[in-house]
Amino acid sequence: MKKIGIQIGQPILDFGAREGRYSIPAAIAVGKTGLIYAVDKEQKVLDELSRKVKRMNLNNIKSVRTTGAVTLDFNAESIYVVLLYDVLHYLNKDERGKLYSEVFRVLRQNGILSVYPKHVLEDSPFDEFGRPHLYDVKREIMASNFRFQKKYCDTISHDYSLNHGCVLNFTK
Image (cartoon, rainbow, N blue to C red; front, side, top):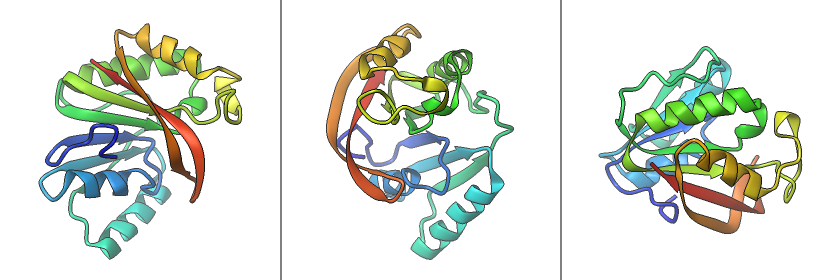
C-alpha cells in the first residue's frame, strides 16, 4: 500500500471492499490517524469485515453500505486515495464511466486513483470487462480526465493467494 502512495493520516476509499482484503492493509498503512472507508453493497461481507477489524483491534475502518449504484456519498475533494481493486470487471462501460466521474469528484487535487484491473487479457478475462489489455484500462480511465502516473507490477494478494499483477495509478 505504501508503494502506491498511501501515507499516514490519509482518508482512503476502498470501493468494492468486500471483507477487507485491501482495506485492512490500507488501514495499517495510514496508521491510527488515517481512515479507510470500506464501501460495498453487500451487508454480509461488511459484517465479516467488522468482525476482522474487531479481532485485529483496528479503529480506523468505517464500513459504508451502498445500494449498488456507482455514486459515492462523500464530499467533493475529501479523499486522498481511491482504490478500485478487482472491481472493474463487474461494471459495464457506462457504470465504469459514472464511477470514474464520481471518483474524480471526491478525490482531492493531485489525489490518487489506484486501480488493480484484475481479469484483463494479461490475466484472466471475466464478466463485463471482456478481454481488454491493461492499455485499454489505462486509456479508458485517462478519457475521464485522469493523468496516468505509474504502473506497479509485483506480487499481489488476490482471493487469499498471491499472484503476479499490475496496479495502475492515476492522479486527478
